[in-house]
Image (cartoon, rainbow, N blue to C red; front, side, top):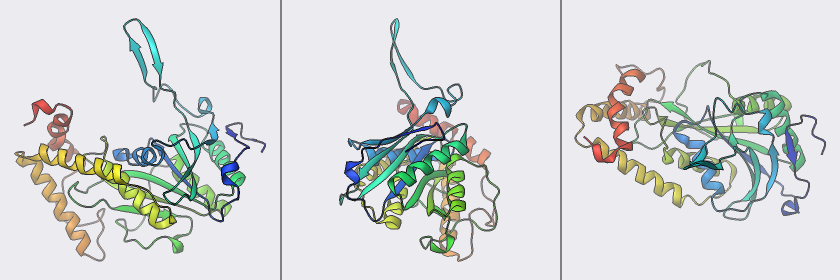
Length: 307
């Protein structure tokens, strides 16, 4: 297939997709803007861990990536550079627990040339006959880590979205992303697309929060019928919650903040028309939460200095 965008190399030999399935889902989980708690990155890692799923498309990151804004890591040993972590944005062909094929687009969110990138993704969709595109992401929210992870669903066909009680009400003007623009453009072109965004406690947004990844994968599974083994990510989530709970012991100030968030969360689950963005009551601001949790988060990195 000719690539008029000059951004993507599509593999022609896709014998693993022969015969062509009636339904083919493309999941995408790009780390960057919409990845609080590393929810999307951890979800993608869970899906691709230990697999030799073939790369069916690769994007030219030299045209899409700002190396000075997000400098890839290198390994320096004594007197020489020994390793470079090359950033890659790829589409792999994977199979779920029932051997159902699906595609996974993962890697860093493009910094530039969004419209050309989206046109290149469209080429991949058309080449392999993708029937639906599903995004995964994470956003910081005023929610506690002690409650089940909630999520927001959105899509190009609102009337066909999975039944779900939204935590948002009214209109919100939000910063755009390559992921959100991709969904918007696909809708304009008549493709089916939807996305799930996990709500990550905003005091943990800069840390890995595996429970959010597990929530995303369960939502995707319910919506698409794909079956995933979540044993590892569930175990990582439980370990993370246990570590946070250990850090909270004896810290009354932090515990008070968490209790306030728990009260808000529980009130939302009881009220039919509540929204975590428009609810009443004196709630901690992001700055107040950041101050309260500064020592707490530092303690996660220095376990020998726990309060």
